[in-house]
Structure formats: structure tokens, C-alpha cells
Length: 242
Image 1: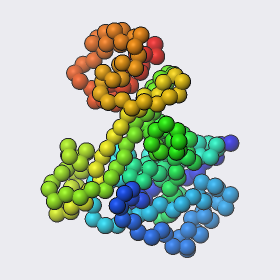
Image 2: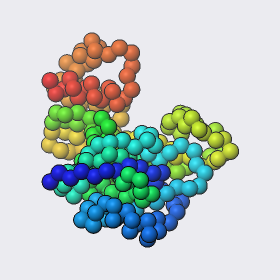
Image 3: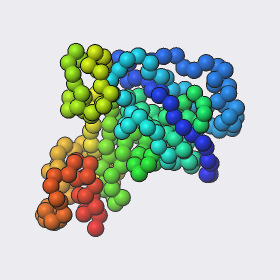
């Protein structure tokens, strides 16, 4: 069933371990939100997202604070979303109605698939072979790579912007000790649907034992310079799917 919802964003999050949050929005805001969404819209009956109001460097989102248009499969139904983002700290998909201060946080077990911009994500619930959360999917063949990003609230008296924090915050304030640190992990999903962690470029190539030489040969002829790991994964999967 296809439904269309007008959605946009706000600065909403809920922290993972040791994170501080503020109370959810008040009842008046919630009632106005539900009235605008429509009483039958099951998407907006979810948990309200908490907001971070304390000073902190960086951000808890998967890629960037700006929300993107896309679509999702929520509890088996297809929805178009005008604005959404992923809270990588709480592992929630955030959606919001245009003009409303209320945001809703959807869990990975509720959202089986989502597209934000050009990125394709899947929600993985507990007991599915990898940690619960949202994963960016690389590859369109029988073998795929699942990328998991986790943000964590850390603190340091030193300037940790850039390499140490895991990304660059152009508005970094040295006098603020708390920051969202970036942590990523990658999993190979074979044709049978089994997951295994991968670390490094050679580890991914070894997942194709019958085609290792061919893949390396194609890489040598295709690569210019040294691409980032995400681009490398996409290229290897593309070669392997041919």
C-alpha cells in the first residue's frame, strides 16, 4: 500500500550510552502533530524523539545534520518521506511533519528498508546475525556489504576534531568537552544470507575465493589512486556481480 506523507526535520536525538536527553514534547504539541498527520497514520504513533540541548561538538546523525527526501517500508507499508535522517547514536530513523516541532523515532525492527537521497538502508532487528541497528547496503548482486555507523557521546579536554573524532566539525568549539565520536563496522552478507565481519580490503576480496585473481586484475585496471573503503567495497561487489 503506497502512502505519501509530508515530512521534515528538527534537531532531535536520543543518546546511546551515557547520553543526556530532554523530556519529550508536551501533550499539546503531540495532539497538534497527530491531527496534522491524521489519526490513522501509524507512522506517527511512534515514540517521540528526544532533543539534545546541551553543548556538544559534532552531531549524532549518520552523515550530516541536513535531512533528505526518500522512502521507506514501515511495518510492511510503503511511504514516501520528504525529510528524514538517521540518528546513529540511538539507531533510529527520524521523520517529521512539515512545520511541526515534533519528530518521531522509528526503530530498526519497524523499518525494513529506507532510502535517503542516494543511500539505501535496511533496518536489522535483534537476533539477525549482526548488531541491531540501521545499515547502509552496498551491492545489488547476491553478495552485499552492510555498513554500520554508530555515534557515541564521548568527552575530552583536548581538541579532537577531525581524525580522532572521526569526522570534521566546522563549528567545533574547543571549550566544549563533549562530542559525538564516529565508529563504523562492515559486514559481508553472502548469497545464503549469512553475515561475517570484514576489516580491510584484502578481507573483502577473500570472500570471493574463486575470483580473487580476476577481481585483483580488474581493480588494477580500474583504480586511479586509492579510493575510500566505501568506494572500494562498491567496486569489488560490482566486479564480482558481473
